[in-house]
Image 1 (cartoon, rainbow, N blue to C red):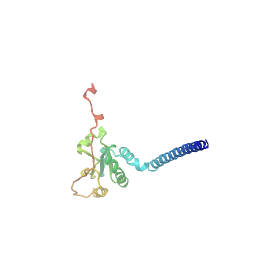
Image 2 (cartoon, helix red, strand yellow):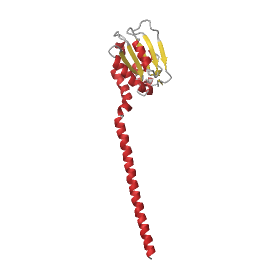
Image 3 (cartoon, rainbow, N blue to C red):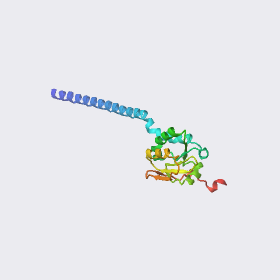
Image 4 (spheres, one colour):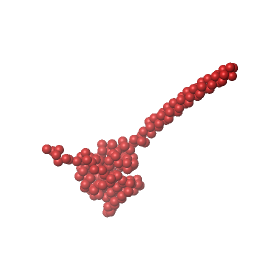
Length: 196
């Protein structure tokens, strides 16, 4: 009988221990989960500028742009970029392009045309834009000097910007395989029946 009682106490003790270990395990898991979530939130907060800077820059390009009609008539060289907010390569190049703008905007017009905006369709056709980003550099007389399509080396673009005023500079076109193909924007298409 005493052995049964002793076994009952031991088994109750094991059950209590097991429940206590389960509680500790649940508490530890909750603590670890809260810690992981906290680290993720703090990281997003600390690195938000890095994660969202390119997207913000692309959105601001249209607002910072010189009107193309003014750019081609004000006797200054022009940096014309065709871009789209969905274009990953455009996002990659946005900080570099923004740095060029900050450095050269006193001497050069910076024109940014979003290919998704129907308003710029005539420029897209005129400059045969099929892949973005596409950067066209013009001298102060409006002559096309260079065309860069796709992801470009900062040094090459900077060199072209510095050489933009040299006389007798031959036209150059530099294409990189890393570019985005312009998507047909069905939102801007006109349905013939819509004008009835």
